[in-house]
View: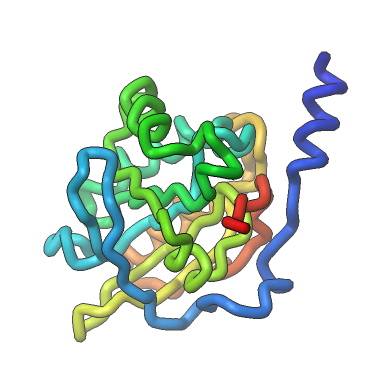
Length: 202
């Protein structure tokens, strides 16, 4: 059974990052969006006026990698939201190709897990395409600038262990946000985000 699970995960895995031809890069200004949250409200980067930045994560219900990271995503929000860097989670998959990622299933998953952060639906997949996200989970750390825009400071994985949080030895997102809070330059700005391919509309 363990071998079968490993084989399935291997088939789902994709290594993005430097191979993305389009999409936003580290150092670019983040493009704003207006997406529906599971409570029906529309959320943008300007909704939270107190935010110093965001941990923007493209994730979903159905990917084993995303599921494995859910508790870590919750912990990131609990740790950094009070300091001005909340999580914004975006579900990028086309629900016709991935019925388990429908809006109703998103609401159920968020309730079952007790997500403390917004869980947004990118129904048109325009935001996903604009950012260049290719898989789930895929993280973009944003930092607010003096002109109220947001700069992309990091793109990639949450940490370096896709299965067990306790086995991770490098915590990329945590380190990036902690550095920004100290007014420091982010040391590791890009990593390979390992996960499931995004299910694009045909």
